[in-house]
Image 1: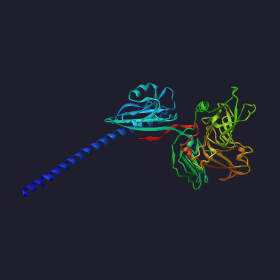
Image 2: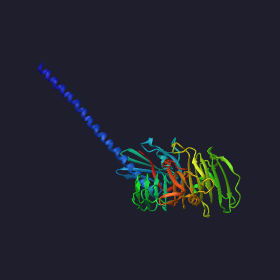
Image 3: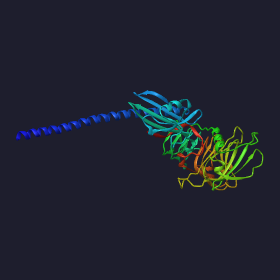
Length: 462
């Protein structure tokens, strides 16, 4: 009996060891498989990331590039990169691109018409993917890395960097930021940044040729950081405004076609209506008309060709107003004739969807008139003056009393302009400058507002 029990005991332990051994062996095989799968996935992913970075760098160097990379051998795998660059849609076809082996990463892109057949052959189809829309100013990179039959996809979206995101932007600075001055939002100058004393910069501050500090103490405060060597030319293409205003906005121009100056008055009403009138050359003003803003300029772009515009009122909606000179002296200016403010104040209500861009080929001025002299002035807008500056008429700068100019938005101009007379660093008369940055401009853009010559990455999907 003892021998049989011992035999059974040995057999039992042997069976247990066989089961454990089998499980350990399976565990080892599974671990090796998992490591192998992880390695393959990681290699495919790294190839896709490398392709996205290569393509993004190429677009940064050439914003019109859209060739991509086709079946490139890379790190023992295959790299394909498709670039949908919508700045110029001529000769392109909209397709729904479905990455091989990863159909959930489908994306709408525009491709050169000559390459459509190749896309259709691997399962893409003409037209946008379900639920997608086309953004004419967006560039999209779809980078596909394939390794041992596994495909990983990285999608990068880029758009031009808009000037409206700046709280302050100047080609050069003629009035030094000084003690008591506070600047919110991104700040940039394409020259040297000169400061006196202890001005405060809350946003990221950049310059092209460095920083020069004056005063005692010479200690500017850069709470958002300071970086030099950043060159961002101040420029914009007025043809884009004209095209947008023609196709869905409003163009004011010399209807006599004799090259005369055009002047336009716009009064924005809280109801959403706009009252306007115009004058050509030395002629008389037209009869005022009042019309819904959505009817006058459905896309929000109002363009004054070879003229000046005079603006006031309450903004209910999204608008960009541009005045161009078209090589005619005395044109290309925007004049604020009374307060301009949003129907819903974005400082007290961040959900405000009212937004305004003022764009002048020359200057933006607060006009010296009965509505502004001897009174405080309010401006809600991102303001852009390509060849000039932004500020009050001389009569307001030198008026005998001191009042405030309260800005919610941003100032982008060739150079700065004084707003008051000073005794030392203290304003004594004119308009004391109060600027609050509208943080919505980090994500919202007035219709067709000028953008820089560079792209920036707005999303990276993996």
